[in-house]
Amino acid sequence: MPMFNASCWLDECLQAVLDQDFSGTMELSVFDDASTDGSRQQVEGWRSRLEAKGVSLVISGHNAARPRGVGYAKNKAVSQSCGQYLCFQDADDVMLPQRVSLQYEASLLHPNALIGCRVRRDPEGSTERYTRWINTISQDQLLTQVYTSHGPTVIMPTWFCSRDWYLKTGPFDEGGKGVPEDLLFFYQSLRRGGGVARVDQCLLVYRYHENATTHSVTEETIWKLRVDFLQERVLSQWESFTIWNAGKQGRKLYRSLSPTNQKKVKAFCDVDDNKIQKGFYTYEESQRPKPTVPVLHYRDAASPFIICVKLDMTGGVLEENLDSLQLKEGTDYYHFN
Image 1: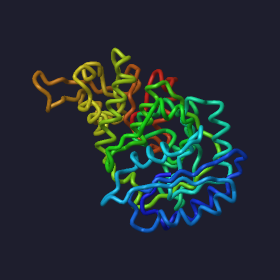
Image 2: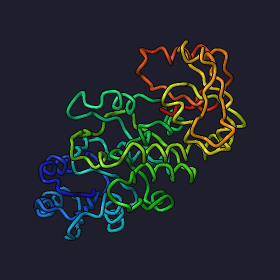
Image 3: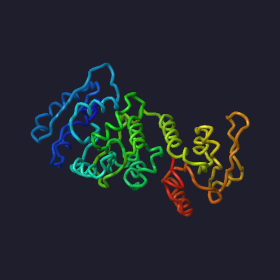
């Protein structure tokens, strides 16, 4: 558990650790990243209660003028711990009683995987589409939808894995504020051949509030990482493809691609007659000669597709159109939005 100024959340978080129904041995490893609100003393005050339940407590930290960041704190918390399995817990979230036991069982079945779970958002209704996506994408989509703007398909506050897999994949990036250390670790895990699995029960109350570290990462940082990973993992394997969306997002993807991958774009496709009637998109900012890419109706376009239309935002129309073409996600198309 990395920790920075979490005093208002800690009692509920630590009570939830005590309430775990796991029958094996547990240790709570906390690294305090320069808190100024008495968080470390508050955790220390729980030591006797934790130890009475058989949970050993390891806590350290630093008192520098400013925090070193979540990646640094996570690495420190892992390195000072000794468990064979790692359950990552944010200080502002709350585990439900079966979390450790069910994720431990799943980790035995998937030793080289990041294990997640379903979550309940607090306050209820915040980030509604995102929460629905976290909880409902299929096991296959945990791997195919890794390029979407949501980030890891199993979210970091729910991660559980073996120490061996953490050591093979990690450590977390320690760049500090503004660095999406969870997304970078997730991509690295996939590069190493790691799996992704989810326990299909709600095992975490996932809090949304304005001080969450997620908010320090810019959309542009995430965008560049996603484009690079898409090019590395998918586009490098394809000879040509179609970008589904001739609007702002599709054109932005095209402009973000390497020159080699821009040449592979055979067309944009869309459902908007105005865009289709224009006939083509010209990349004005490029060197001469300026590339022009045809714009087609989606029924006239050839797979494979990179889809730049937001999921769950068209009243089911996008999903119906995809279904009508009888395509397979992960082979004939990938979602990028």
